[in-house]
Length: 72
Image (cartoon, rainbow, N blue to C red; front, side, top):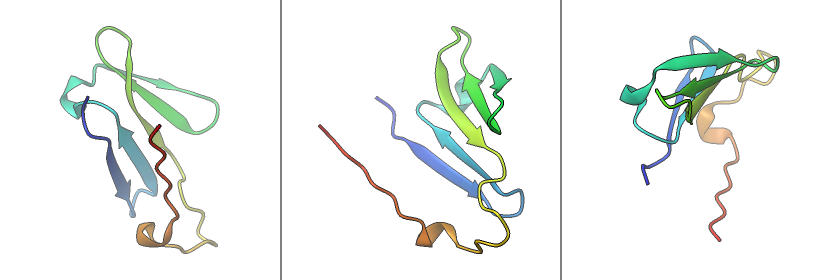
């Protein structure tokens, strides 16, 4: 299993999360919730991009965001 990669573009205000190698990106599918699913050639979701991740009034940095990881 690949490591999960998280990229925050402060200028573009987007958050990208990758579950697999970003080089495998083949096609993207936009949802109605400002989320873009990134898929490989087989149609498997290998990541997603969240548009408008932080609203201007929040003003938080990525280091201030709470992250919880649960391993079962």
